[in-house]
Image (cartoon, rainbow, N blue to C red; front, side, top):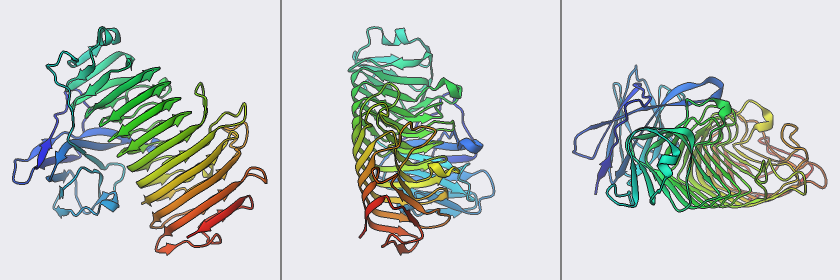
Length: 467
């Protein structure tokens, strides 16, 4: 059965008119959907576009470009989505939810990010006594939380948190309806069993960079789920996970343009499951660390899958740089990255290259990592992977301890500007040991030996295998 749900933009939302986006079920009436402004790329901040809707079955999409349309590309290329061009219009049909970048005339910075979400399940009932309905306006946190029932439901419209930070109690749900824009930050601190979900937007573009507000902060907490929402331009991370366990993140979208505005960062945490996310960040999209700041311990059992990563700056995937340098380091282990499209890796500083990076610092051990079915479309500045035991003078009082047992399986990069990928141990005692490449392809070539010019392997890296 074909179903389509669209959402009006609230008065006060920041919109753009570069694109007119219309959707319909086959044979139905065209519905125009709002196009929001999302800023991208820290080095040269520009205004791109974003639109979203929910669907099931088939949905037809028509995108009118307000300019002279000469060519278009729809990415990820792995979707192989057929489309047609007619004068100023791009047309295609979706038969499943997808997250897409529609790029007209080669423009990746004024592009349209189009998010076709799956239909929601278990939408809270506005008439239920277990739901507190919050209409648009300025809200004080004590008023929102006083005698709070199970769910805090933000209806469509503009919402402002007077204190900026909304701390969610244990056992509660925060629901952002489609068409809701919440100006503020959500916090899970020493809580359990919290849900954050919906189709709305957390908007933080107006906060100063050094306010360091995150979209969502999850610290000293367990059994937290985030599903469906979008975070726009937070001063710091889109989702921060510190010393927390049992975290699920689904169908999450984020954009950022500030220094240190990573996507999803985790420290001293475990049992993290991230699925179907779209991250376009001006720092690392996904970062996995050990101890840092007040959060102590290693990190383990992390799964990131079925996702799209776009690093306008730094790494799409970064592991290992921070740990317990005051003592004996941390162990970061059992990490898997599966079925991922990397749309861009652009980093001018050689010390921060690597679309897939493991940089073990602070006496850390990083082990048992799998990168499987990873498709890298573009590297404008950087390298394919960077596996190093490091002593980064900016961040590490001590070098790392070791990296061991890493598998790269079915890695595809079509070629282009590419610096050699590094596999470097630090010294005889701080080594890289046990790296396996199973079907590593650069351009049309399958890499089968360590002497290939695309690789740079030093004498402290051992047991490098090619299948």
